[in-house]
Length: 65
Image (cartoon, rainbow, N blue to C red; front, side, top):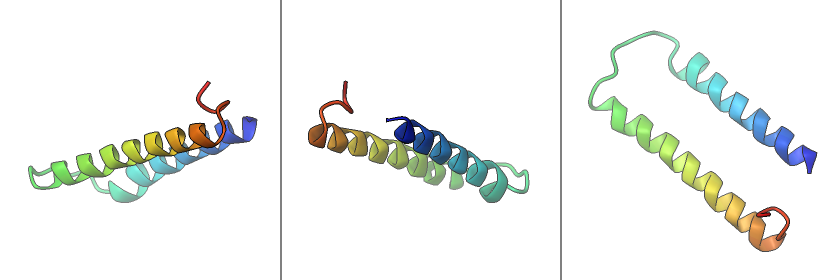
């Protein structure tokens, strides 16, 4: 089960690196057009993770415990 936590932490660190190091390399004012797009990306990513955990809990009940 420790590999699941290691993979999760690695995934979060990868997303932080991408967000802070790649997507926002240059500081700029976020426009009203850009903000909803990035919000939608991160919300959909969170919902996808939730769906993945629910899917895993259906396969293996110990995951949801």
